[in-house]
Length: 462
Ligand code: FRU
Image (cartoon, rainbow, N blue to C red; front, side):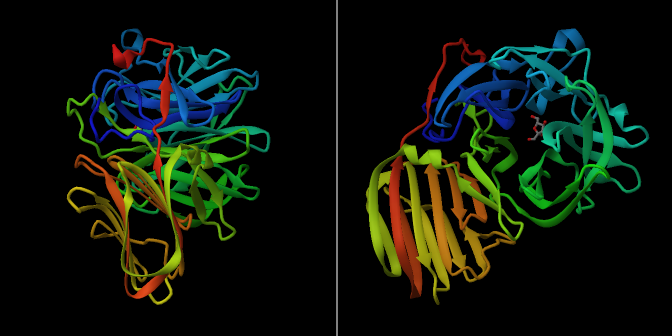
């Protein structure tokens, strides 16, 4: 657990495996995060729902496991992803995916659990799922999973992902509507989205919500970079009309993004950061992304910025005032394996700008992002369809947390990347070609770790 790769200001469980964030909910002043968790090993398997809460997204309290598979009672093998909602009687309910065997062989059911008022204790009803696959009538759906509940026009809906099986086999998003106040009776309303890629295996973790007064967003995980579409939603047809699409994160290590709406009215997202060595014997594997605030631009594009709460982690600080850069600017007086940089650069006629975290000992660039005209490269590999095209002003925020890096540019480009090499201390380097660029300002901070507490005996630490 003293593994130097283990991130410190990204959320991690007490030990062992984590994948998707689930059931994100802001309730009575607490941000509750549930997550896909193997409490016994640092690899995927025996999937439970882990649970933690925080008032400020920085100080976390680890809580007892919320859901465990009901193996003996009904042969349930895993509790896959889902969501948490408050029903019409003010009672907390979890909806999740019940898995009885290998996911692709056995149909899944949509199970539920009722929570205590403080969301700390959960009771499952494994013999009494809220939906089985036959809810779709003649339409055959496989890989059906990951319920997400949202409210719209005083009605309560749920979406799930799956594959429509048949001659036009497709990854689809399916819509259901609650028929009672308890949220225990659901009716299937239809397919509201078909993925344009014909050979897609399935759609995982669809998240669908009104991101602005007249605009819905669909975020989904298609066994590749997380994608989004924004558009309008008519619940009566029912139909989602996607108008603008994009990639939520261009890195290879960001998946299963989920959201909560908090008391401030913000939509905040968290996702699973993957790409670490599995079953390495280090006692941990995986973390969640930094919390992001999601908004919709006037052009319909998704805007993402790191949650402002993260500023409270800032400690030692170095600033560079504006000036022309030609060649390298190295900031070597502050080195650490936990850094954040915020910089504003005007490209002007500069054709190549690169930013890097460089290992202080070896002088090797561990993470290097290069903007070359309308192309973007990460550690030498071109990122396809990067939406920076033609931007003259580059507003950068980059986070280095040991082996995890998160890059935000102009709120429209995000990229998460995990590295395997053990980190030591990094310094920050900016480099412009001979045409030069104008640095408006640059701030660099060392960041503090998240803090964790718990009054409970936690399964993964036994
Ligand atoms: C996405 C996913 C979900 C599933 C869960 C299983 O990473 O495959 O579709 O519910 O993880 O752990």
